[in-house]
Length: 477
Ligand SMILES: Cc1cc2nc3c(=O)[nH]c(=O)nc-3n(C[C@H](O)[C@H](O)[C@H](O)COP(=O)(O)OP(=O)(O)OC[C@H]3O[C@@H](n4cnc5c(N)ncnc54)[C@H](O)[C@@H]3O)c2cc1C
Picture (cartoon, rainbow, N blue to C red):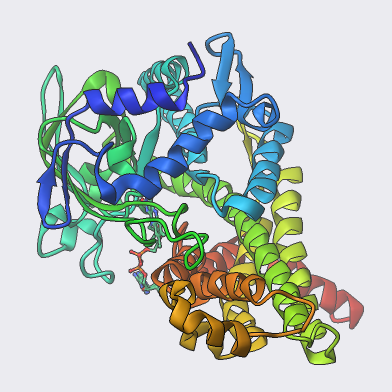
């Protein structure tokens, strides 16, 4: 099959019975729940785009693994050109849609790690992962990434936490499989996917070998529970007041594994703590190029919005405003350029996939994500205080108050007040709403924090070589 329709995707969700809690109750059917409307709408787009002749070139690929067409989501990228294609799609698509689900790169990372473990240990994790891949590709399935553990006291490793379940761990195993206990945090969109795919969230030592576990299981596996919050937008769409957040956003989850059984054929790591360093080394550049391209695209949205509201307000030519918009352009280009550069500098892993450059990818994201946060404030500064104080859509639609809003919310005389209001609501959605906070968190925390980027750059940048160069320049022997 390879490519499903969004209708078939929704039907497949109806057949699953995951244990999902939201809005204070357990729900049986995510497809008809108001809490999942936004996330489902967003997920459906990927199926629709794969069936849209105009978008197909970005969202459909030929898979040599199953010798069929497969989705953007499940395709294994084997060359730097293919990885470049992912970030080009993110850059182009996110400029209108904010998100292109960059968790899709998770499987590439495990492809390399399972290969490393098998080579060293004679295990057959890689074959199992390949089989899993084939199933995802064949039935066009979706998965969520369960990487981040609750982590408890951050100063302590998993094995020294007061509660051993604060990192997901293996508590038992037999000839059929393993039993895991613990949780994963922030598993975006979990209840509307088909599988949860897990791996350790950090480098482990020998004492933490029970935590060195990776696997994939259907989301309705017994003992798996999703404690969920809805996407940040309104439960009912508000086309004028919440133009972005009415349609874009993830359901977020605490995913609890209460003594969950995993059959061996779906286990991709079990106890090989020495390979968690490789896992993080491969994970880091993949996540960072995707977030770098995404942040660049979102910065482009801010630049376009800032230029448009400045024009509507009659200050489009003001020097300080143009200068700030130019800063947005520069930051976007740096983020994008580093993502491209990191892909161009990829090294091939013996498993047959490229690993992008760690240092450049982290440096680019570090820069662009911090400036993105600053630019959210800049956008408010350019738009003015009405972003947070303006009357709501209901007042604009009320005949008694509309005429006053029309009169006093006029900017330039040649711009209809309604256009200016729509743009201001968009800016409110981006910078002064729960969705705005989500965009900020997504820039600052999703895919690892800025401090992680600093550590990665400091670790891989060859400072000694630069010191030696300076000594040579100064004739210091
Ligand atoms: C919108 C969004 C979507 C996400 N989606 C997913 C997803 O789908 N799947 C998934 O697995 N994760 C997801 N994440 C999680 C994301 O990867 C984490 O939020 C991120 O890696 C930071 O981890 P944390 O939130 O536990 O923060 P922490 O690690 O607690 O960091 C908080 C602060 O503490 C500092 N700190 C932490 N540990 C130490 C230490 N040992 N010593 C000194 N300082 C320390 C950090 O530098 C940081 O400043 C998502 C996050 C967001 C915001």
